[in-house]
Amino acid sequence: MRPLKLGINIDHVATIRNARGGLHPDPMRAAILAQEAGADSITIHLREDRRHIIDSDVFEIAGGLVIPLNLEMAATDEMKEIALKLAPEAVCLVPEKREEKTTEGGLNVIDVQDNLREFISELQDNGSRVSLFIEPNEMQIKAAHYTGARAIEFHTGRYCEAVEKGDYTAASECLSDLHIGARLAASLGLDVHAGHGITYDSVTEIARIPEISELNIGHFLVGEAIFIGLKDSISKMRQIMDDARRVSF
Ligand code: PXP
Image 1: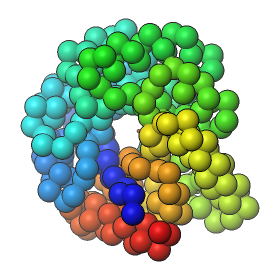
Image 2: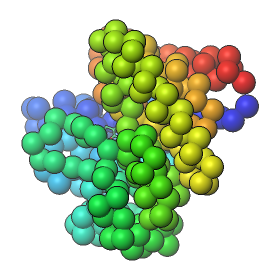
Image 3: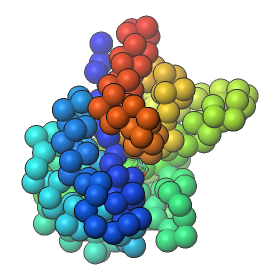
């Protein structure tokens, strides 16, 4: 059975800290707890406006983990400089708009594929595996492959939103796009990841897509931690993912 890795995004621990200023709750402490709960990697998104994770978090977390760090960032010169200095195991390139609440959709790789090729090769030559956060769309997948990125991460937001609303027609269309996209990406030799908006209710069908090798999950687990604690919220997600994977192989 192909293992399915779980990356934990701890951005929103920093969101809560920043709501008051000060040091609590500490994202580093959350990263260590997630590691102890069985996370395969920690994801943090350093946004241009530093609304949650700040530069000092990035360097502290990078230096304090046993498991790999996945740095999410926009493809800007400022972020490239930080990533080159830090050399995290993984970098995920995401689109970023100041006015958005979260990363609302995938990157439009087609429009910037030539620029991205150079940007990605610098990061990958520096030892970071680069993934591109995209919609499960044939043209985007082919463009991502052209850039030389080793991985793609599918934006699962539309699927998860349809599940949450109980719109099963839309959910099944989105799921089909994810299956078709994952098959195409894997056939091109790309590692296939997925993330955004995943909850206990939406994770099973995503985890059953055999080509997907990694899920990155944040907001729901940090929210659930208020009720059951961070370790338990992560362990429960891990259990549902493992059960889904067992049934489908
Ligand atoms: N993967 C990527 C590339 C993201 O941008 C995000 C959200 O920041 C996530 C995964 C995690 O999404 P969520 O917080 O909704 O679980």
